Amino acid sequence: MSRAAGAADVLLVRSRPGWVPAIVRILFGLVLLAWTVTMMIDAADFFAADGTVPPDVAVSAGLRWFDLSSTTAAWLALVALAAASIAITVGWRPTFWLVVAFVLLVSIQRRNTTILNSGDLLIRNLALLLAFVPTGAALSVDRWRRHGRRALGTAPPIAPWGLRLVQFQLVVVYLFAFWSKSGATWRNGTAVSTALRLDDLERFPAPSWMVDDVVVVAVLTWGALAVELALAMFLWWKPARPYLIVVGIVFHLSIDTFLLVGFFGPAMVVGLLTFLDADRVDRRVAARRPASPGVAGGEERGDGSAVAEQGDVAVL
Image (cartoon, rainbow, N blue to C red; front, side, top):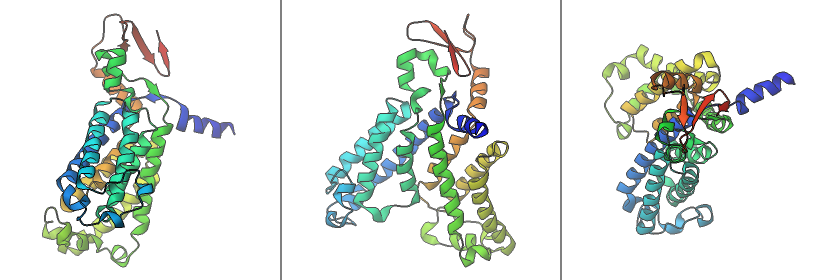
């Protein structure tokens, strides 16, 4: 029991510097803003009364919270979502705006479910899960206002349990992505070639050796399965984590280079970055932070006094 309690303490309670939630918040805000802009471009086609899905056949309004039955209403929701994404990015009351973003995303996405893919749903889930994380603890307007400009160079300790929710979501996505690839083309090693031949999903044409060479196609196909399984199983293993984060980012960038898969890749990269080592990030930042006279690695409070954070303890 003592071992289990110790493991639970390390996993959920023991504080780490708040750099990782701040980095994830900024990148998620940018991804959400880009998603919103793409929706604005096609708002008339997606959400108008005479658009692809009429309002009377959309998902029940009770599950949407807002009845976006006109282009004007959809535009107002998208403008509000863009404002929320900017507030999240800069760190102005991010928890509040993440909840607002989640509500708006549900309303917008359920107005027309035919245009959605896994990336859209993942962005919606991340908005809710990140609302349970103190993402504004560092690199935020809130921290600047409370403690002064120099506080942006430091990060207070936070409990990691909220980030675990995001990490669990990410691992579940990888596990089911692997599990769903059980068709014959994945087993016989030809699935990648098939995907790269789909003209309607093509972003840039793949070189012929990636499509026609039997050995290369088999390696890429089975390699994709191996990467997804490794990311699902071993991201929790600390020695392998830095390498798997890099492999995962390269994996998603490679897919996005050749295939139009929406915002799934950027959303997964945001999730991968929740596995960054907060202590290592803190050491890197501290090594580049100029020392203040009389304060080693500390922060300046709003009243001009100094706070030096050592592990989980703030020393006045």
